[in-house]
Length: 146
Image (cartoon, rainbow, N blue to C red; front, side):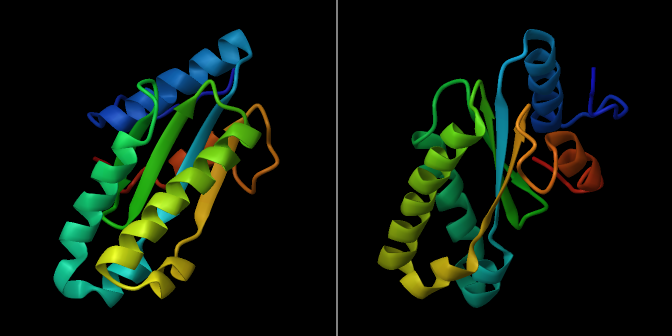
């Protein structure tokens, strides 16, 4: 069984990812992780970047299921944990979340900024992505994840 295999962390999001990944492996169910890098948008709207970040987190949290979780990573990435969701379901969720972000930018900044946001996706057991969930979390374990 593959685990994130990190020392116990005080970060609730990482703990939840680890628990859900272990559960997915144990019961052979799906889990997906979406990550949106918003750093380039934040640099373009410097004076409003904190508001943008808070607004996007709030909007995304209203559009996800109760079992899903959203968190800010390293102040420039938004991570979305999708338990019991295969890659195709994550792609659908990604389109829905992308629409939310696009509409927000259209109303509050510039829709052109949306072109700078690309979601990264990892799913278990589907390894069609460039990284596994474990690899993504391990690569980013030094980040300040909230």
